[in-house]
Image (cartoon, rainbow, N blue to C red):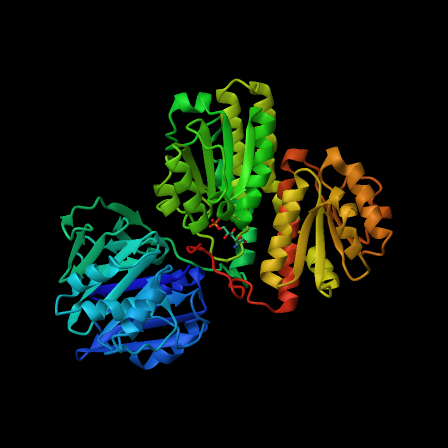
Length: 612
Ligand code: AGP
């Protein structure tokens, strides 16, 4: 989950590189660096910490004109986030600079081989090993040395490099880690990036490198080579994003802006896909074979983090509406599990970024077993979307904050639409029942708007509960994965030990932890399990736990139990996820404000986890 960027063009390459890294910083922000070439020498700038630290170092050079530059923003895998381990990395002669995203699995053995040749290393990273290896093979032909070296590597890499003897060239290659190349029609600017987010604000032709392909950029030409160093033709696509830019629109953090975007993003997720008159759902570009849609026998959902929680919610929908077995696998576990994967299995991969390595590995394993892959992503050209048989786009717009919010509620929306789509196509859901549900779903944006107006009330409650160092988030039925998602929000942006549990499970052990120092957040919006939920909260209250309940105005009895209640409008059980989640997001946000954490870029995390 690092971000690499390269620029050759008619503008200031240092400035362009900084701008590109800003758009990639969500992929990792432990350190950053840029390298260029001046008077046949590598000129580089590196800094631990965020990009702003690097910018301060570069200031004096920002207005000098360099023809090319490569840059990197790092999420540490090998070696701590220090200056020495920051990219770019160099060969011992300082003639070559390289930036890398991925993990080289055999770097230790290569390092040992090079050390035996008395080559001096400056860092403990796997990336420096690549730089030294390419330099070791270099004999005035950069492309050949590069090709020979990467053939020795095992693991994953997206790399870009420059060499002081070749001041107008950039070489790049990718294996299991994405690289996309963008260029204008005249090739006045050619850009290399880990993902298309770095191209936002430009209209470009783009092409994606496949595994083991090499890109050689020189004199406004882009040559792509296959693993036999034969030039190949690549299909290009058009990315028009001149009018898209990242801005907080006046909010203090991207996170709050994205929380407040949800009434709109949920509408965008169902716009044009709901046909109320017929009670049907339609997806554009949905090209799973109709024959398969009629006959797949079970569904496996695979995802990570917040997307995994969306999958847990969705498994209820598919089992309820489709009467079909649906399991949910944590992607990093799925790859190593003995699952019954057959051609009658539909794999649904959920990923906001579409770049999560664990999820990518899970779908690759499923494809080896002839499963059909349907991905639900928020980035159209993402690797997961491109490796799926079909994908459904969230249309939520770029989600910048590492903490996922609008993507989650859009995922839930799309997954519900998908369940209705499958159920209607198999005549398992009557038209009128579908119409009733879809009408309720269309009310959700307004329900959310009302909760967003409770900001001050929730902020006040957050101030009261911010003193605690641990929380339990409890729920039953659909409120349990909802509680998991709310706990993750608090964990990742406030660094508080927040755990979710099925409310009925507390008495089987975790109740031992309960005391006046460990508050319970109880999601009481599921009518089917409401009474049981009250009993579970009573058990915690009897042991002095502070109780914060999220309940709907029509609930009874909760006032005698909870110390604080956040009231929301009543919705049908299936849709209670939405109001409950918005409350959980705002609660986490306002507690994090009090904790003064780095809300949009929490410590140790990255937005797109592209390593396993
Ligand atoms: C969510 O707030 C986290 N940032 C994280 O759990 C995230 O959901 C997970 O890494 C999966 O990302 P993806 O949806 O892009 O695959």
